[in-house]
Image 1 (cartoon, rainbow, N blue to C red):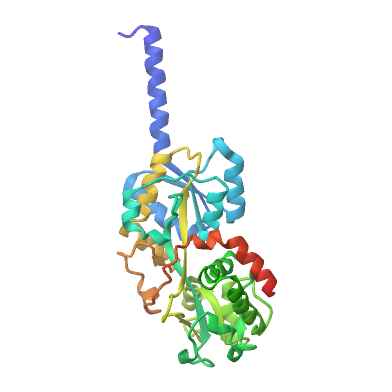
Image 2 (image 1 turned 180 degrees about the vertical axis):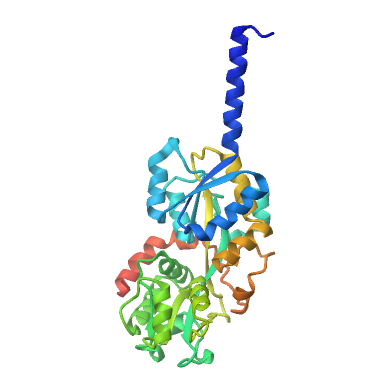
Length: 334
Protein backbone atom coordinates (compact mmCIF):
# COMPACT_ATOMS: atom_id res chain seq x y z
CA UNK A 1 0.00 0.00 0.00
CA UNK A 2 1.30 3.49 -0.92
CA UNK A 3 2.15 5.93 1.87
CA UNK A 4 -0.17 9.01 1.98
CA UNK A 5 2.48 11.36 0.54
CA UNK A 6 3.35 8.96 -2.28
CA UNK A 7 -0.36 8.37 -2.91
CA UNK A 8 -0.97 12.11 -3.32
CA UNK A 9 1.98 12.35 -5.72
CA UNK A 10 0.65 9.45 -7.76
CA UNK A 11 -2.81 11.03 -7.90
CA UNK A 12 -1.32 14.35 -8.99
CA UNK A 13 0.65 12.67 -11.76
CA UNK A 14 -2.50 10.85 -12.87
CA UNK A 15 -4.41 14.13 -13.01
CA UNK A 16 -1.63 15.79 -15.02
CA UNK A 17 -1.53 12.88 -17.44
CA UNK A 18 -5.32 12.96 -17.74
CA UNK A 19 -5.31 16.70 -18.45
CA UNK A 20 -2.56 16.31 -21.05
CA UNK A 21 -4.44 13.50 -22.77
CA UNK A 22 -7.60 15.56 -22.79
CA UNK A 23 -5.78 18.54 -24.30
CA UNK A 24 -4.30 16.35 -27.03
CA UNK A 25 -7.83 15.30 -27.99
CA UNK A 26 -8.73 18.86 -28.97
CA UNK A 27 -7.61 21.37 -31.59
CA UNK A 28 -8.83 24.97 -31.74
CA UNK A 29 -9.03 26.74 -35.11
CA UNK A 30 -9.62 30.44 -35.73
CA UNK A 31 -11.23 30.57 -39.16
CA UNK A 32 -12.27 33.35 -41.53
CA UNK A 33 -14.26 30.81 -43.55
CA UNK A 34 -17.95 30.49 -42.73
CA UNK A 35 -19.09 27.54 -40.62
CA UNK A 36 -20.82 25.48 -43.29
CA UNK A 37 -17.69 25.50 -45.47
CA UNK A 38 -15.40 23.99 -42.84
CA UNK A 39 -17.60 21.99 -40.46
CA UNK A 40 -17.90 18.94 -42.77
CA UNK A 41 -14.10 18.64 -42.90
CA UNK A 42 -13.63 18.92 -39.15
CA UNK A 43 -16.52 16.53 -38.47
CA UNK A 44 -14.88 13.96 -40.73
CA UNK A 45 -11.59 14.32 -38.85
CA UNK A 46 -13.28 13.91 -35.47
CA UNK A 47 -15.09 10.81 -36.71
CA UNK A 48 -11.81 9.36 -38.00
CA UNK A 49 -9.56 10.20 -35.03
CA UNK A 50 -11.74 11.09 -32.06
CA UNK A 51 -10.01 14.48 -31.83
CA UNK A 52 -12.47 17.32 -31.34
CA UNK A 53 -11.97 20.36 -33.57
CA UNK A 54 -13.37 23.56 -32.12
CA UNK A 55 -13.51 26.58 -34.38
CA UNK A 56 -14.25 30.27 -34.01
CA UNK A 57 -15.19 32.22 -37.14
CA UNK A 58 -14.69 35.91 -37.84
CA UNK A 59 -13.08 38.10 -40.49
CA UNK A 60 -9.36 37.61 -40.94
CA UNK A 61 -8.19 40.96 -39.51
CA UNK A 62 -9.94 40.59 -36.10
CA UNK A 63 -8.77 36.98 -35.84
CA UNK A 64 -5.15 37.90 -36.49
CA UNK A 65 -5.33 40.75 -33.99
CA UNK A 66 -6.88 38.40 -31.44
CA UNK A 67 -4.05 35.88 -31.86
CA UNK A 68 -1.51 38.68 -31.47
CA UNK A 69 -3.24 40.03 -28.36
CA UNK A 70 -3.49 36.59 -26.73
CA UNK A 71 0.26 36.07 -27.10
CA UNK A 72 1.55 33.25 -24.91
CA UNK A 73 -1.96 32.75 -23.49
CA UNK A 74 -3.10 31.50 -26.87
CA UNK A 75 -6.43 29.80 -27.42
CA UNK A 76 -6.01 29.00 -31.11
CA UNK A 77 -3.76 26.28 -32.45
CA UNK A 78 -4.38 27.12 -36.09
CA UNK A 79 -5.35 30.08 -38.28
CA UNK A 80 -7.42 29.16 -41.34
CA UNK A 81 -8.03 31.95 -43.82
CA UNK A 82 -8.28 32.86 -47.49
CA UNK A 83 -5.72 34.39 -49.83
CA UNK A 84 -1.95 34.15 -49.65
CA UNK A 85 -1.89 37.89 -48.97
CA UNK A 86 -3.62 37.35 -45.62
CA UNK A 87 -1.43 34.37 -44.71
CA UNK A 88 1.70 36.32 -45.58
CA UNK A 89 0.47 39.20 -43.41
CA UNK A 90 -0.09 36.80 -40.48
CA UNK A 91 3.44 35.50 -40.99
CA UNK A 92 4.85 39.06 -40.95
CA UNK A 93 2.91 39.83 -37.75
CA UNK A 94 4.84 37.04 -36.04
CA UNK A 95 1.72 35.10 -35.02
CA UNK A 96 2.62 31.90 -36.89
CA UNK A 97 5.40 29.41 -36.24
CA UNK A 98 7.11 27.42 -38.97
CA UNK A 99 6.89 23.65 -39.03
CA UNK A 100 8.08 21.12 -41.55
CA UNK A 101 6.21 18.03 -42.65
CA UNK A 102 7.15 15.45 -45.25
CA UNK A 103 3.43 14.67 -45.60
CA UNK A 104 2.53 18.26 -46.49
CA UNK A 105 5.55 18.65 -48.77
CA UNK A 106 4.52 15.52 -50.66
CA UNK A 107 0.86 16.52 -50.95
CA UNK A 108 0.98 20.26 -51.72
CA UNK A 109 3.12 21.80 -54.50
CA UNK A 110 5.79 24.25 -53.34
CA UNK A 111 4.19 27.31 -55.00
CA UNK A 112 1.16 26.86 -52.71
CA UNK A 113 3.21 26.81 -49.50
CA UNK A 114 5.16 29.40 -47.53
CA UNK A 115 8.86 29.23 -48.37
CA UNK A 116 9.55 29.57 -44.63
CA UNK A 117 7.06 26.76 -43.77
CA UNK A 118 4.71 29.12 -41.89
CA UNK A 119 1.56 28.00 -43.75
CA UNK A 120 0.24 25.74 -46.49
CA UNK A 121 -2.53 26.00 -49.03
CA UNK A 122 -5.53 23.70 -48.69
CA UNK A 123 -7.74 24.62 -51.65
CA UNK A 124 -7.32 26.70 -54.78
CA UNK A 125 -9.48 29.28 -56.54
CA UNK A 126 -8.84 30.92 -59.88
CA UNK A 127 -9.49 34.65 -60.23
CA UNK A 128 -10.58 34.70 -63.82
CA UNK A 129 -12.68 36.46 -66.44
CA UNK A 130 -16.47 36.10 -66.45
CA UNK A 131 -18.39 37.09 -69.57
CA UNK A 132 -21.93 37.47 -70.90
CA UNK A 133 -22.90 34.55 -73.13
CA UNK A 134 -25.35 36.87 -74.95
CA UNK A 135 -22.98 39.74 -75.75
CA UNK A 136 -19.46 38.31 -75.80
CA UNK A 137 -17.88 35.55 -77.85
CA UNK A 138 -15.09 33.60 -76.12
CA UNK A 139 -12.91 34.28 -79.17
CA UNK A 140 -12.96 38.00 -78.25
CA UNK A 141 -11.20 37.29 -74.96
CA UNK A 142 -7.49 36.62 -74.49
CA UNK A 143 -5.77 37.99 -71.37
CA UNK A 144 -6.30 40.01 -68.20
CA UNK A 145 -4.17 42.72 -69.76
CA UNK A 146 -6.39 42.93 -72.86
CA UNK A 147 -9.35 44.04 -70.72
CA UNK A 148 -7.60 47.43 -70.74
CA UNK A 149 -8.07 47.70 -74.53
CA UNK A 150 -10.46 50.21 -76.13
CA UNK A 151 -12.68 47.28 -77.18
CA UNK A 152 -13.94 46.95 -73.59
CA UNK A 153 -14.65 50.63 -72.91
CA UNK A 154 -17.85 50.92 -70.86
CA UNK A 155 -18.18 47.12 -70.72
CA UNK A 156 -16.12 46.08 -67.67
CA UNK A 157 -17.23 45.46 -64.08
CA UNK A 158 -14.82 45.11 -61.16
CA UNK A 159 -14.96 44.52 -57.45
CA UNK A 160 -13.46 47.11 -55.12
CA UNK A 161 -9.68 47.39 -54.84
CA UNK A 162 -10.09 47.20 -51.07
CA UNK A 163 -10.56 43.42 -51.29
CA UNK A 164 -7.40 41.35 -50.95
CA UNK A 165 -8.32 39.20 -53.98
CA UNK A 166 -7.78 42.15 -56.33
CA UNK A 167 -4.70 43.28 -54.43
CA UNK A 168 -3.18 39.82 -54.93
CA UNK A 169 -4.00 39.78 -58.65
CA UNK A 170 -2.37 43.20 -59.02
CA UNK A 171 0.65 42.02 -57.03
CA UNK A 172 1.23 39.18 -59.48
CA UNK A 173 0.90 41.59 -62.41
CA UNK A 174 3.63 43.73 -60.83
CA UNK A 175 5.81 40.65 -60.41
CA UNK A 176 5.27 39.76 -64.07
CA UNK A 177 5.32 43.16 -65.81
CA UNK A 178 6.86 45.60 -63.36
CA UNK A 179 5.09 48.54 -61.72
CA UNK A 180 4.96 50.94 -64.69
CA UNK A 181 3.33 48.47 -67.09
CA UNK A 182 0.94 47.21 -64.42
CA UNK A 183 -0.20 50.76 -63.62
CA UNK A 184 -0.92 51.26 -67.30
CA UNK A 185 -3.03 48.08 -67.33
CA UNK A 186 -4.97 49.02 -64.19
CA UNK A 187 -5.66 52.53 -65.53
CA UNK A 188 -7.04 50.89 -68.66
CA UNK A 189 -9.35 48.73 -66.58
CA UNK A 190 -10.57 51.74 -64.62
CA UNK A 191 -11.19 53.68 -67.85
CA UNK A 192 -13.24 50.76 -69.20
CA UNK A 193 -15.58 50.47 -66.20
CA UNK A 194 -19.27 50.59 -67.02
CA UNK A 195 -20.20 51.61 -63.47
CA UNK A 196 -18.78 52.09 -59.99
CA UNK A 197 -16.91 49.15 -58.47
CA UNK A 198 -18.92 46.53 -56.58
CA UNK A 199 -18.54 45.31 -53.00
CA UNK A 200 -18.38 41.63 -53.92
CA UNK A 201 -17.94 39.18 -56.79
CA UNK A 202 -21.54 37.98 -56.81
CA UNK A 203 -22.65 41.55 -57.56
CA UNK A 204 -20.21 41.61 -60.50
CA UNK A 205 -21.69 38.37 -61.87
CA UNK A 206 -25.25 39.60 -61.42
CA UNK A 207 -24.39 42.87 -63.18
CA UNK A 208 -23.05 40.92 -66.17
CA UNK A 209 -26.16 38.75 -66.19
CA UNK A 210 -28.41 41.84 -66.05
CA UNK A 211 -26.62 43.60 -68.92
CA UNK A 212 -25.00 46.29 -66.82
CA UNK A 213 -21.60 45.18 -68.15
CA UNK A 214 -20.27 42.45 -70.42
CA UNK A 215 -17.14 41.19 -68.67
CA UNK A 216 -15.66 41.11 -65.17
CA UNK A 217 -13.01 39.48 -62.99
CA UNK A 218 -14.19 37.08 -60.28
CA UNK A 219 -13.17 34.15 -58.11
CA UNK A 220 -14.42 30.87 -59.53
CA UNK A 221 -16.25 29.64 -56.44
CA UNK A 222 -18.55 32.69 -56.45
CA UNK A 223 -19.55 31.72 -59.97
CA UNK A 224 -20.12 28.14 -58.82
CA UNK A 225 -22.40 29.17 -55.98
CA UNK A 226 -24.45 31.59 -58.10
CA UNK A 227 -24.74 29.12 -60.98
CA UNK A 228 -26.05 26.52 -58.53
CA UNK A 229 -28.80 28.96 -57.51
CA UNK A 230 -29.46 30.11 -61.09
CA UNK A 231 -28.74 27.28 -63.56
CA UNK A 232 -29.86 29.50 -66.47
CA UNK A 233 -27.29 32.19 -65.58
CA UNK A 234 -26.19 33.91 -68.78
CA UNK A 235 -22.57 34.10 -67.66
CA UNK A 236 -19.61 31.79 -68.22
CA UNK A 237 -15.98 31.65 -67.17
CA UNK A 238 -13.03 32.22 -69.49
CA UNK A 239 -9.46 31.12 -68.74
CA UNK A 240 -7.11 33.98 -69.75
CA UNK A 241 -3.39 34.01 -70.56
CA UNK A 242 -3.32 30.43 -71.76
CA UNK A 243 -0.63 31.33 -74.27
CA UNK A 244 1.75 32.68 -71.64
CA UNK A 245 1.85 32.59 -67.84
CA UNK A 246 -1.64 31.16 -67.18
CA UNK A 247 -4.58 31.95 -64.89
CA UNK A 248 -4.02 33.72 -61.57
CA UNK A 249 -4.59 31.17 -58.80
CA UNK A 250 -4.87 31.90 -55.10
CA UNK A 251 -5.84 29.74 -52.17
CA UNK A 252 -7.30 29.17 -48.76
CA UNK A 253 -4.66 28.03 -46.31
CA UNK A 254 -3.74 27.27 -42.74
CA UNK A 255 -0.89 28.05 -40.36
CA UNK A 256 0.19 26.93 -36.89
CA UNK A 257 -0.02 29.76 -34.34
CA UNK A 258 3.17 30.80 -32.56
CA UNK A 259 1.97 29.72 -29.10
CA UNK A 260 -0.36 26.88 -30.11
CA UNK A 261 -1.50 25.00 -26.96
CA UNK A 262 -1.70 21.69 -28.83
CA UNK A 263 0.98 21.89 -31.54
CA UNK A 264 1.36 18.17 -32.24
CA UNK A 265 -2.39 17.58 -32.50
CA UNK A 266 -2.67 20.68 -34.71
CA UNK A 267 0.09 19.46 -37.03
CA UNK A 268 -1.65 16.11 -37.35
CA UNK A 269 -4.87 17.86 -38.39
CA UNK A 270 -3.08 19.99 -41.01
CA UNK A 271 -1.35 16.93 -42.43
CA UNK A 272 -4.67 15.11 -42.71
CA UNK A 273 -6.27 18.13 -44.40
CA UNK A 274 -3.75 17.79 -47.25
CA UNK A 275 -4.59 14.11 -47.89
CA UNK A 276 -6.93 13.03 -50.72
CA UNK A 277 -9.66 12.07 -48.24
CA UNK A 278 -9.87 15.54 -46.73
CA UNK A 279 -9.05 17.44 -49.91
CA UNK A 280 -12.07 16.01 -51.68
CA UNK A 281 -14.43 17.05 -48.88
CA UNK A 282 -12.90 20.51 -48.52
CA UNK A 283 -12.84 21.32 -52.23
CA UNK A 284 -16.30 19.90 -52.96
CA UNK A 285 -18.01 21.82 -50.16
CA UNK A 286 -16.28 25.07 -51.16
CA UNK A 287 -16.59 24.56 -54.94
CA UNK A 288 -12.84 25.05 -55.20
CA UNK A 289 -9.94 23.14 -56.71
CA UNK A 290 -7.98 20.76 -54.47
CA UNK A 291 -4.48 21.99 -53.64
CA UNK A 292 -3.32 18.37 -53.76
CA UNK A 293 -2.85 17.64 -57.50
CA UNK A 294 -3.60 13.95 -56.96
CA UNK A 295 -7.24 14.84 -56.20
CA UNK A 296 -9.74 15.61 -58.95
CA UNK A 297 -12.16 18.55 -58.58
CA UNK A 298 -15.87 17.92 -58.20
CA UNK A 299 -17.90 17.15 -61.31
CA UNK A 300 -19.41 20.63 -61.25
CA UNK A 301 -16.04 22.39 -60.96
CA UNK A 302 -14.48 20.10 -63.59
CA UNK A 303 -17.25 21.15 -66.00
CA UNK A 304 -15.71 24.63 -66.15
CA UNK A 305 -12.85 23.11 -68.14
CA UNK A 306 -9.13 22.62 -67.65
CA UNK A 307 -6.67 25.51 -67.68
CA UNK A 308 -3.00 26.36 -67.37
CA UNK A 309 -2.37 28.04 -64.01
CA UNK A 310 0.25 30.65 -63.22
CA UNK A 311 3.21 28.96 -61.52
CA UNK A 312 4.32 32.03 -59.57
CA UNK A 313 4.62 31.25 -55.84
CA UNK A 314 1.42 32.58 -54.27
CA UNK A 315 3.36 34.28 -51.48
CA UNK A 316 4.31 36.91 -54.09
CA UNK A 317 0.80 38.24 -53.43
CA UNK A 318 1.84 39.08 -49.90
CA UNK A 319 5.32 40.33 -50.62
CA UNK A 320 4.01 42.87 -53.14
CA UNK A 321 0.71 43.63 -51.40
CA UNK A 322 1.64 47.08 -50.08
CA UNK A 323 3.07 48.07 -53.46
CA UNK A 324 -0.07 46.80 -55.19
CA UNK A 325 -2.36 48.84 -52.92
CA UNK A 326 -0.42 52.04 -53.60
CA UNK A 327 -0.44 51.39 -57.34
CA UNK A 328 -4.19 50.70 -57.43
CA UNK A 329 -4.80 53.93 -55.57
CA UNK A 330 -2.68 55.91 -58.04
CA UNK A 331 -4.53 54.31 -60.94
CA UNK A 332 -7.93 55.33 -59.55
CA UNK A 333 -9.18 51.86 -58.61
CA UNK A 334 -10.99 52.45 -55.35
